[in-house]
Length: 138
Length: 365
Image 1 (cartoon, rainbow over the protein chains, first blue to last red):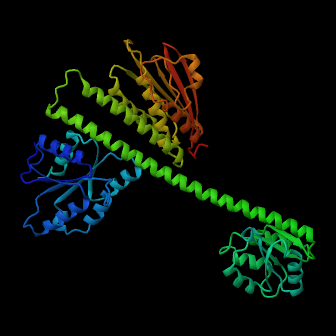
Image 2 (cartoon, chains in turn yellow, purple; image 1 turned 180 degrees about the horizontal axis):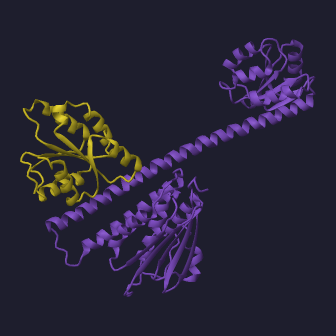
């Protein structure tokens, strides 16, 4: 149970089963009540940019897959980097991937927008710990 | 037929030389002529020739200088220099500076020149084929790269989803499974994933450049033990590290070697052994490191010992068949870094591997 009242989690993954798995995991672990899933990185970006009209952006965790068709995780990060600080400062990005490619891993670790890279299958314990780490000062 | 003719450009400031050349060879080759380097360059803009023959002694630009000037734009044509004197300096300069294939003394002898031209064309063809082969190999390598990348993703991704589903069934207790089928599925998936990871390991070993970094065997081996300990908590690990001097080597390959050997030592224990042991010893010397990995496991049949480093060889006398690739990777990784391996084993009593890896520490060598 994590008690950030209005915490929301955005899932970006082209694999529908992984989306479902991660949703269930978050619900079972009571990490957040608000889960918004996208199977396409572009749609997630569109949603985030529409948030600019909100009075206050709720604390947000983005679970981002690396390999996706059309727009991959790195392209998402590149586009997201140009977003206004109002949005960016509220979003914490966790990459989730089954990649063993060292290029992918090094690029992820080098990206300042990424809090952490978690391996698939996503383990409840790892996710909980990473989320707690992000909000340890709240 | 016309496409197969040898195309030659001949440059000489003396018009009657050009004419004589044309008269002699026009039946055998497709001949272009120019009376100066400048004319030649203009001509080369529109025609691809196989061979360029240039006179050395020309006003404004000499043959050697001409070859030197065109060597970047036109690296392919084979160059032949015609020179009136056997001036060694000239010839040395020509060969070094202008990438010249051959020189022919003036006045040229028809047979000698024809021979030189024929050799030059062979060279042209050989270089062209080599270039094509290189392009082809680069393409194959590039495809292999992409193949490995998609193997590591496209094959693993669904496996990781299955593992995720299995984890979820345990979290929400939604599956009643009195016979432990889910555990069986999990162990099959882990095995398959282990095999995919081995393939990627093999590939990285064969492709990655060797890099030398400082290695601390104490921490490296502790990491290995921590990774394998959970697979069989009954095993007693003994570490004996003697590293009085710095060691430099390729971290990736040395980890691959140690991981594979320790994994085997852990995996192939006797099921009824009351005191399973794995002993790891390291001795670092200025010029090499020797590592011993010893277990009291099931051992290897003596008739199998000579085959264990072969790709896809599996020893049949155990109930835990491996992928047949682990020890092969060990051998390949060792050959990349100049190491050696020896094995001693008694069936039913245990196995000892001894590996020796050169120390790349510059200060001591």
